Image 1 (cartoon, rainbow, N blue to C red):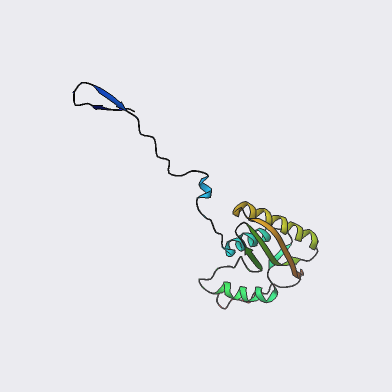
Image 2: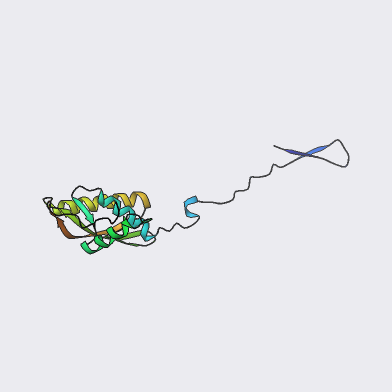
Length: 156
């Protein structure tokens, strides 16, 4: 589009150069700010990914599971998906510690490997962070005849 102006003589018009569009920013839009991911976000992702693995009975130690079960029964409370998971999150990397209970009869090393692979894939895909390590502590084996450590509800 060209703007036209008239001179004082009246009938001679000179074209004015078209305005150049103003470019507001340069470079990759992803580099125009910072994204921070809380430790709890990574812990939730890792906890859900670990629970998806066949052979994982629960996350957390027996005591933590008992207190968590009581807390889960409180009205308004919600299940803690971060129980048994600890994350340290940096700007581009994260490290995770998981405490799991495996079902009796499964290969503990196989379950640990599957948990590690599933957690790394989920965390890296969802957050873009590089997972530098996933430490797994197997704190118990769930025997078939054992009852879960959840207390009986007081109200039905």
